[in-house]
Amino acid sequence: MRYTKRGRLRFTSHRDISRAVERALRRADVPVAFSAGFSPHPKISYVGAAAPTGVASEAEYLEISVTRECEPDQVRAALDASLPVGLDVLDVVEAGTGSLADRLECSAWELRLPGAGPALAGAAVERFLAADRVEVERLTKKGMRRFDAREAVLSLAVFEGTETTAGQASSQPCVILRMVVRHATPAVRPDDVLAGMRLVADFAPPVPPEVTRLAQGPLDAHTGEPADPLDLDRDITRGGEAEPAGRHVGGDL
Image (cartoon, rainbow, N blue to C red; front, side, top):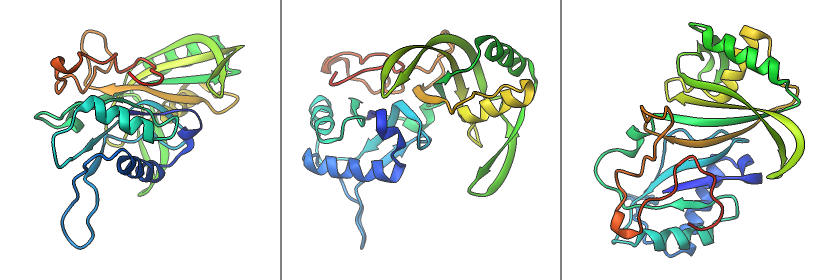
């Protein structure tokens, strides 16, 4: 299942999302399988690295084990109606063979930087991409870690757009960074790339960026973007292909 984290729900923690999904599954009457033992729990697996708290996403994934065969479109509609607005279910398919986690090789990100100068941002991107290695530090659960933020970045480009507030576009200009980052250990996040740009070019946005994960999946060698990880499981006879993983979708499909 592919779902989103939009609007104010980008500030929701992963634990809160898990609770919301479990309640929605009960309301939608989805026959979820439970584990055995003294403390049974629903068999729900959140696949890949979850978008950090405060970051929006158009492409989060999870797997649900069920006790009987279900129609994917019906599960999608019922579950989407049972979740709060912002946690929107975009796509549900019946799982085939192979690991979904192994298909999530990279993520496409968009960062909106209100108040940043396009020329300065462009120069910083050029210096970052020209560097062989850009070491940054981040506090993790295991303490402060130092790692290379450059190697995992497959592409990084600057665009000009307009600011958005509460999901609504304004007339104020805004620098937009779009990047494709390969999943690695430790994970390189958009804020790590910004930290690297600050180190190599002294570039720092005047306000915190608005970050959105647009897609994640296997790397398409032709486009350089993530492909739809559910394509291998999709049953064409059940309604055809979904929209590309990087497209913003509102409401039911």
